[in-house]
Length: 209
Image (cartoon, rainbow, N blue to C red; front, side, top):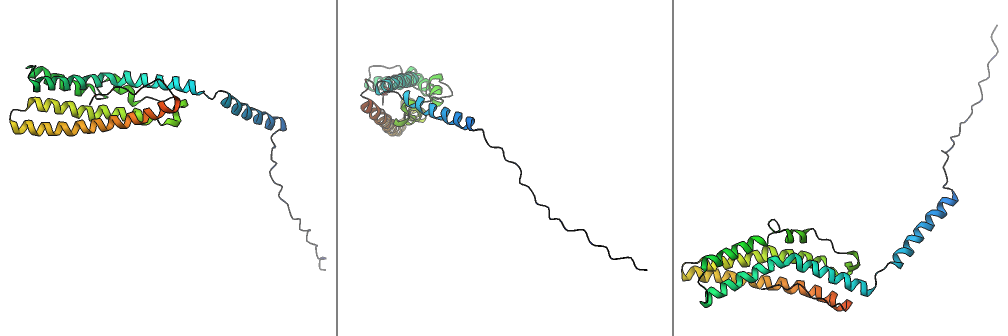
């Protein structure tokens, strides 16, 4: 006898249920929104006034003057020594050469703590719109390589032993001084824009050339 045919089990289509998603509690959403709103309000409330920004600018320029004054003083001393030798009012050539070479070394960030401070200086956020980072980097460049080159060339002029060597060294010094002056003018222009905008009683660092 043949067995009766067996009915196949019904096919059941399994439906995949999506992973349950956790919704952020409404109170958490409200709290986050409140914190953000408070942060915006706080930043607006603490926006510095023009008077505060002017004070910040004065502090910035004081820092710039302090950090560059040693290098700037060396440039002045080197040029004064050269002028004295050239005019015949001084005959201390060896001493003048020493002054110039020391001054050149003192304008390098590696040898001067003050110039090194300029390299890592951070401008306060209240003055960000005036792009004063250009002043900081501009002063670093004014010091090294520009002031370094001027004082090295001063030493070169003083050490020259022939008229031809002296003429060549003098021409190099003239070029270096023009570069130094152009860099000083660029720094001064940026500072003066900020001083004018804030009606601040301040001035750029005094840089010789």
